[in-house]
Image (cartoon, rainbow, N blue to C red; front, side, top):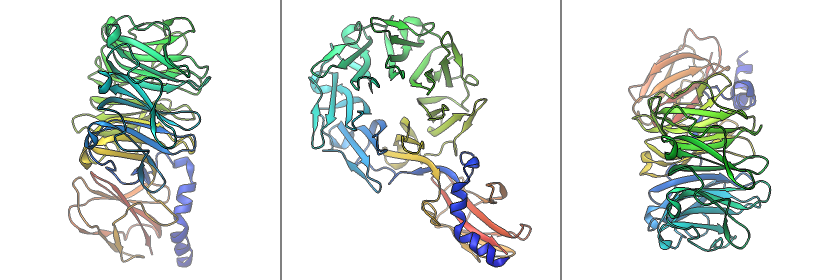
Length: 459
């Protein structure tokens, strides 16, 4: 029996990772850093996350240590590296929006100070960042640039609040030579905020925004080939919205997430069923008020929403299971405040990734993914736990290098169920395991900065 336990002890992480039915709810899965936390050279604003077709994550941001110009970095499997030069834009930038072309080229749209606040798009040609068409191509100053590629013709489109057209919504596309208006410029009923652009599977561009022409409520419009038309009723939300974020389900339904002023500024998601906008789950489903809502839809059609969570202002991600909104891993999992949260799924394995400006790491850029806290066959993710004696029969000592605040220790069985919990207040803690059945267990320490996991054998 003891020999069998030791065999399990060696091979267990393979079993744990392979048991997919409890993958999304297991305490052995949580948010882990992709490379180093705070990997940017300095403070990162307007973080925007996107994936190459091969599954490499890229992040664009306004780079404060490079004269507030645009920088793009990608993860090479080990480290975050610059894509071309850091701070490659001609001047200061604002509202960076990143998208990857179908051929794998990164493009970035932004408000461009060199062009007096007009829109500029640049792409990386493999060696340098070059302008796509003319820099500063919009009619006037822009805010809330949102970049996306058409799935039918592969052309880049940009939506924005257009100061050249009474601060209304405008969408332009690059036709291979020039940036041209898609329908009328300034097509919205009134002034807009938080423009968010996405394409249906059939290639129609849709734009969601806070609609000042409809009592600051949410509105979505689409281009029907000739005109911009409302999708359902304009101003369909219950009240004022902020941080509108638009995404499509695999079945073709547009979903919009936002901070809901009619429901204590909590998060709400609505989707269009072809006739009406309906609430997904309950209105105002978050624990408290939210900022920087970012919605993404999984390959299986589940909506996920990331946001800066309440007065603590850390990152939380939730998913809709068909009935309820549930936390994905630990709520408020970031090291500190999280700003400009940007959520996306890997096209290779479907894992959710989150990029943000990380106040827990000097306001630098951090990317995390929801994954096993184990990184190999028997190697925990950055674990600093020491467990002894191991195997043990009656008591074990848990020792860690430091005790951040809000530390709690849990012992979990093979099914991921907690069988013992203990609040940690010192470097060394002794636990009584005499009442536990013989077998293999995980030891999981959670705190305000990280998750650490080890294993023990109870004799």
